[in-house]
Image (cartoon, rainbow, N blue to C red):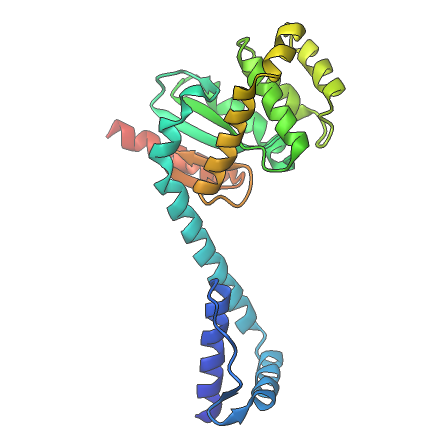
Amino acid sequence: MRLQATLAALLALGAAACSGGQTKAPDSIDRMSKAEVESIVKEYLLREPEILFQMQAAYQTNQLATQTLAAEGAWDKLIASSKDDPFIGRKDAPITIVEFSDYDCGVCKMAVPWVMSQVDDRRSDIKVIIKESAVRGADSRRAAIAALAAHNQGKYREMHVALMKAPANAYTPENLEIIAKSVGLDVARWKADMARPELAQRVDRSVSEFDVAGLQGTPSFLINGKFVGGYAQEELESLIEATRKQIKG
């Protein structure tokens, strides 16, 4: 019973630590020294290693629940601030996907064909709003500004896809100009627009919204207010179909 009580106390401490608590390890438990306790726990975990997986699973579940709550709670604010954000698809589509994306994100690049297939679906019931959340540094920030400058010429989709096809960390001014020419932009106008401070401010706003929504990485999706972290195609498509059914009543 003493061993069980000791282990229960330690596991509770471990769970608190995994959930982000600031619990401090005690110097003793049940009149046992710290060294004695550590020896017991080490022996127990070597004999029952699955407890570590259980603790990790509990931690991940808690993290996902926290992230989902924050992201879905930010939905109204994200929609309200999206009037300047580029979108692809029908403006009045009943299903809105908000995607937080970064050009230096390999998974974002993988997701592009699927995202485009949703707005190109014959039902025309999906609009995708792209949040240019350049969270990976100066290179992705430069690409995000380049995409927004292309948006000013009505060529956002073309530029977005072309940028996503380029290798990560390759967004030098020279490479961006090559990409801009390849999609038919007026390069002089595009360069002038890139220098406008409001475009950089819009990227900063998307990065701030990334934080407000409690996101951990890109891509992250919200579909009519429901959160999906990462490019989980099956989960995304299931949520879209469920949303269609809900809309139909």
